[in-house]
Amino acid sequence: MRYQCKKLLTTAFAIWALVIVPIIAKNVVEDRSAEPLPDSLAEVIDSLQTQEPPDLKQTPPGEVMVTSYYGRSFHGRRTASGEIYDKNELTCAHKSLPFQTLLKITNPKNGKSVVVRVNDRGPFKRGRQLDISYSAARELDMLAAGVLKLQVEIIFPEQVAKEPVASSEESNRS
Image (cartoon, rainbow, N blue to C red; front, side):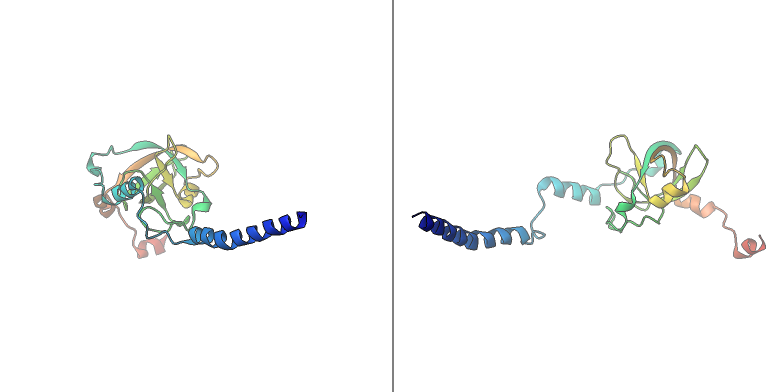
């Protein structure tokens, strides 16, 4: 009797597994990319793509921002602008500045400066206003600190055009 009960349970379990496991597997591997996003996520993504950028002319000439940098683990991931993050490029993330905005960032502790381009959104950690690339952080000597208050200025296209550029003849004389 005990043997028959054990055999019956084993058979029932085998039948259950043959029926249920394929259903579970189908649900796990089913392609959900065509499904619409929940309203809250869709609204966030839509706002990032259609939100009017702020008027940059009203931005203060220089502002101190709490700045952190992307860890090397973010290398190769897609940014909010659609670009792939490259830790060796001079880029940054800001919550509201338009993509492609150029920023001059200065470390007041050592006077070192770097020009970065906004290509991502963030940072999303409370109290931080700017995330810069690993390369920019290295040039500013802030890798050990991790988070610093840095001087940030927007560079307008007319400012870039006014900057003197050394010709190749001048650089060869040096």
